[in-house]
Amino acid sequence: MHQPETTPRQSIWYNYRVFPFRRPAELDGAAGMQPVVVVGAGPIGLVTALNLARFGVPSVVLEAEQQVSHGSRAIVLTRRSMEIIQQAGVAAPFLAKGLPWSDGRSFYRGQEVYRMVLPHDADDRFLPGLNLQQQYIEQYLVEAVQRSPLIELRWGSKVVAVQQHDEHATLRVDTPQGEYDLRAGWVVAADGGRSAMRRLLGLRMEGRAYAGNFVIADIRADIGLPTQRLCYFDPEWNPGNNVLVHRQPEGIWRLDFRLPEGETAEQALAPALLAERIDKILAMVGRPVPWELDWATVYSASTLTLGEFVHGRVCFTGDAAHLLPIFGVRGANTGLQDCENLAWKLAFVVRGLAPPALLASYSSERVAAAREICEEGGKSTRFMTPPSAGFRLMRDAVLSLSLEEPFVRDLLHWRTSRPHSYHHTPLNSFLDDDAQFGGGPACGATLQNVRLGGDDFLFDHFRSGFHLLAFAGATPSAEQAAMLRSLREQKAPLVRVLVAPQPTAEMAALADVVVADPGGRIAGRYAAPPGAAYLARPDLHVCARWLAPGAAQVNQALATACGRVA
Amino acid sequence: MTAKKLAPAELEAVYDLLSEAIDAVPEAQRELFLAKLALVLANMVGSPGQVAAAVKAAAANLG
Image (cartoon, rainbow over all chains, first blue to last red; front, side, top):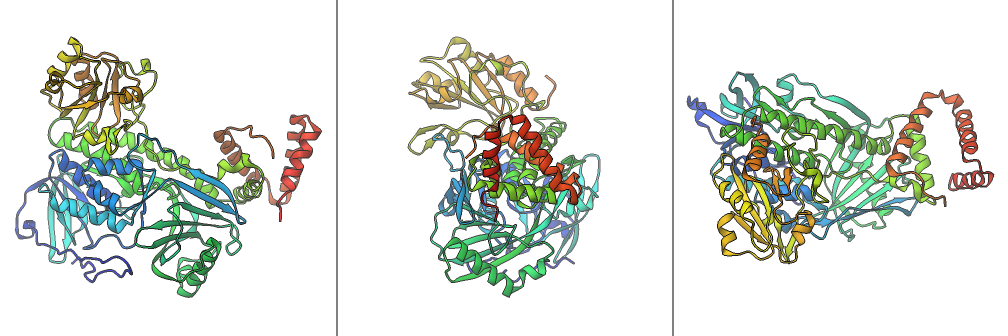
């Protein structure tokens, strides 16, 4: 019998709540079929469920524990992650609590050798980074899930067996009151890095794990520095290794450092040694202040991924699908892009709007993204934790040169998580005018947000479904009006967004959303002359764009993007 | 200070290439390998003055 911990976890700043286990009908003989079961109530599982609900698909979420994340874990959300969270309708508490930031400083021998400035566009709503503890991330998502009539979150429910069938899967669920079978049309495995689902299906990841352990310690201390990512290479107290410092809400600071070669996790977490090192880090930062430890753990870096994310009726997502190095904040941020990609496709399949084959594109698009991250993240990992004598010598050479030779300093920066482009996906239209545009997001890229006024952005006007951004002149042409009219009734949910310099009553009748663009700012960012249109998938990736499309072309592109043979 | 001539991606590729080349040489012969590499690069640069500037840049901050 599964017995999850029911005393609240210890924390000096977070008040853990133990959520009750509620006896499900299946324990008393009910045997219905759930359209989707999500395994894991971490950030990725919860956002998947919220997105499925957005597209009208109910789900059951199973979580083995009865509390949110133990420790602050994933603390940096990227701009793209915040856009995904905004689309899921839950951004407000994240922005109220989180600490936004956009730059970092790297030091070597007391000298600042690299200033990392993450790109920020005046048209973006969110800054490049937002620091927020995973406890809060999960709490805000759980609160949103509890408001949704389409999501049933079952705490204290651990999957112990999986059986695949042609049209469904059966999960054996262990609970504090016994075991039951749960039948699911589809299963989303979002159960994290130590995924039980991955183990139960006997799946192995490909790639490599790096030697070298890192300690993460969260302390409360009055450090009084701004929100920036601080990095110290090769400090005197920890030669050859490096230290990262991140500010979090509630006066908490994340310290992250590599252990000396050969030291075990147990040795590193021994209170006396850990305290000595925290003191040394605070002295190095120039703030030798009193502190209190909240949580500490040890991790190592991997670049591992499943080669296929969809297995029978089970779709893997987030850390359950891949283990990526955290340098460049690639864990939860990659997972959020995974589940943003998966949710609409799964919802369309469940609702009969797309064939199950559409899910193959989830796998191919996101496996390619994971492999790209393994390749890129591997470079930063080889710098942060050199795997051999040659890499160590070169790392030391670069650091030594960095003091006076700026040409090597780009090597001190690991690229930060960014949205991936699906340039080669079969969901893109190949009959459009992509190559004829002189700018704007190309097929496969994410749409570009645009500031419309003080606190008003293009993405704020989006809804759920495909979006057709149609650009009009002073008045829509007869062809454009006819296209918009005939796209009113669609099999797939389509939001017609008409962008015009001066919206008129006639335009309001042609579109679901009309956006005023008096200065032509949106048209400029999209390099769109009057008559042009962009078609974006529900995850806001462009799948077609034309200079002057008719309804037939849009319909064909919609069919292609839904995996239907047009 | 030497002028930046490699694009970031080229510099990353050179970094990996050199790291792996050093790993491929037995430890006892690495100094010899690196000295030969410096000579070959000096010949490619073709300028004693530039080689002297490179020696100065590499000699700084060793300790």
